[in-house]
Length: 249
Ligand code: IPE
Ligand code: IPE
Ligand code: MG
Image 1: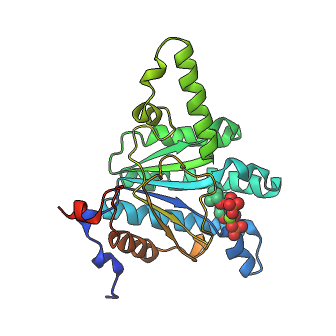
Image 2 (image 1 turned 45 degrees about the horizontal axis):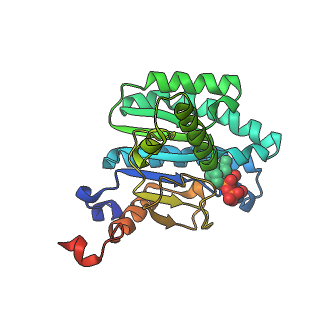
């Protein structure tokens, strides 16, 4: 059998939460003289492979940036195509999610989604809600500034209503008012396509995440690429502000 980087992964030091900025679908398609949507279609295969690989390894949370609030500004041709791809993928993958005991979750300004996409999403979320192996979160119509603005607004409202005092606002309370409430912060953030930026993704949550950038375009991102990212992650020392000596004690 071909050697796999999977064998180099230390299961006891697996990232509990992996977040991914799935980028490069358009360039992947353009490279082959195809329409951007062709890239998005193939991006779905990479989603399936990555989800499967994470679940097999025992990763508990996988969070995928699928569509940003800024992506609404793309051409209606592309937005419509992405939306119909979403419903198709939800329909086609629901059984696989259940067979693999994976719970689907979605965060973002979901009310902006067209009704049929919103309904398909809610159906899939409800249908997988008792699954326990891994939580797959799709970030749709998501941006970190949208999320942080909403958090401030919600906390301000509760203060005004007298439900909480300003003195009670702390990191835990903020965490509980984010779309990711209840989830651990990402240990590892992967971005494909060679861009090295965050693009309005999980700004609060990635305070201490390890960042991993690869030049691979998202449709080409394979299970081996995921293993490579995890092996790289495991070679790092996460210090959280302490010194190396303190960590090793
Ligand atoms: C990522 O690929 C998918 C979405 C943002 C929806 P892109 O569509 O951004 O592809 P590039 O970056 O233009 O190559
Ligand atoms: C980030 O990719 C958003 C998603 C992957 C969904 P973009 O392609 O939209 O980011 P920028 O515009 O290159 O920063
Ligand atoms: Mg892009």
